[in-house]
Image (cartoon, rainbow, N blue to C red; front, side, top):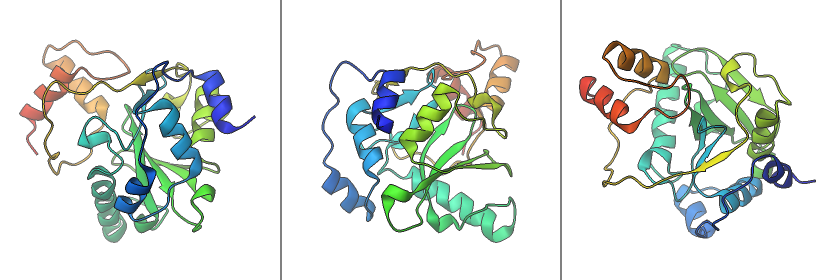
Length: 224
């Protein structure tokens, strides 16, 4: 059984076929080849989130610039890592130039491809704490990582909130308004937003997606 077959059995994809991706254009825009498992994953599931909306994977058709594979976020996250790497703020265990951000979690973790060796199909997955020193490396591709996490096959000690996630996929819904270029804002742990929201009278779930109106209120109170 392939990794994708295992994932679709565990976590059914949308019944509606996602729009096709022009992979030649995407790879030309990124200036690099992409792993075949990712291209199959993105083609079958489309843009969205796994595990009760907890793990979001960047997609060429991402509905906002925050979750678009060819948008500004991968390079901006690399800038943060490079600064931490150069200044010794946090112990980044890899050369930031070898890390390409491919998603994140509601707990603030960032997911990366480790783009060495040269063959994309041999790239492994790294997970980092948001603004912290903890990292975890998964010796496998993105699809097998999703299978391992959603099935409970692996334990990720630095990030216990990756345990016990629902085995579902939520397609992304385009926003009702045009989203401009995201401001150059430091990454923020979603728990900080939840704590601020509760202190200011907002109702927020313990996990899962933070309601848009809460995030917008937080951003207005904390300008970039």
